[in-house]
Length: 89
Image (cartoon, rainbow, N blue to C red; front, side):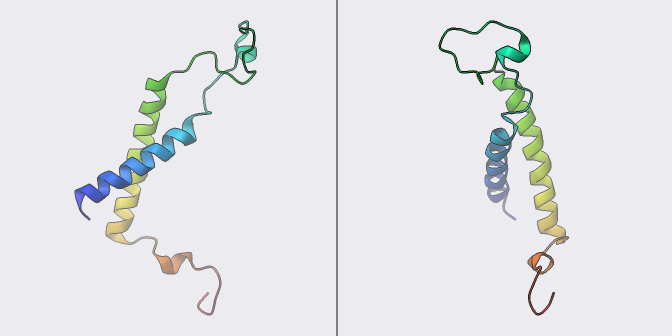
């Protein structure tokens, strides 16, 4: 597998991980006991820490990309393993 392919796969996993991790660790004003600004949405976070989110996304994307590349090299799970019905199942 080319290194550019691995980089593209990592980027895709990174973006997916960032969106997946967005709702975790976020507290609203009601949960934190802080007064809301008039007109503010009830679901708005008290503070948004993009650095922490990106660090978590980098780590998760690296782990998932490593697992993907190792599976590509060693062939642990193939398309034949994913067929759940049909004549060969």
